[in-house]
Image (cartoon, rainbow, N blue to C red; front, side, top):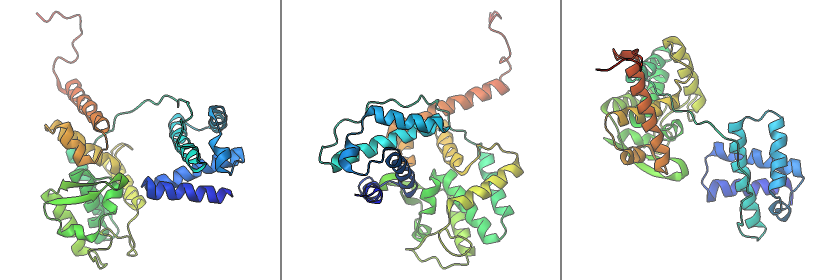
Length: 305
């Protein structure tokens, strides 16, 4: 068995059995390839016998090359999954994953933008585009992220059938899971405006959002447009397309949405992923308090009576 055989089997498993995204598959294959090169192990049985010490030594070398904590934690998770797969391929069953803790990661809160900033960002992207239809396209994408809470990959995966979706839209998210999200009038209008200007045919079974040459639109093009617009608006680097999804969740929660409903709208597999927005909302309220409350600067030594 060759290295290519091992990687082919692992990639097929990730794509079809685990239903991972193409981006995740590429990252996991690269991680597995580095382990194969480091250990010269191209046989399932040999891979199945790699223990915690071997894994620690490999990751230690990676850290010595400058691998950051976040990347190291992600790589450890990928390697554990790969070795679990190797044990199954070797006929040893899934067994027990190597007992190794990843580095501690300080979880930062998502950085939402304000409603006005979200709309201004979409409008500036539209105004600054080289062609009118491209501006309408990028604006429609951003409105889907902020107005419907879609991930950028989910928006770009929509077919043109979404144009006739009406008041709700069926979205396919991570792991192929589907959910139904409501479409605000401004979002529907943005999609219709783009479709009316798009120079390419938009049959229902083909991608809705097109690149300049008619092919599927890539996330990088939207990200570049947003990067230019946020500079023009004086927004921080955290004002990315994905921040619009964070803003959708934060603003809904602030308006009284319950966590379970928000979980369904976002397509989160676990409620824990949604609960982070309770902290974001609290942080926003604290900022408002600090900036606007007339007693904020009073010291704790003052007698409130």
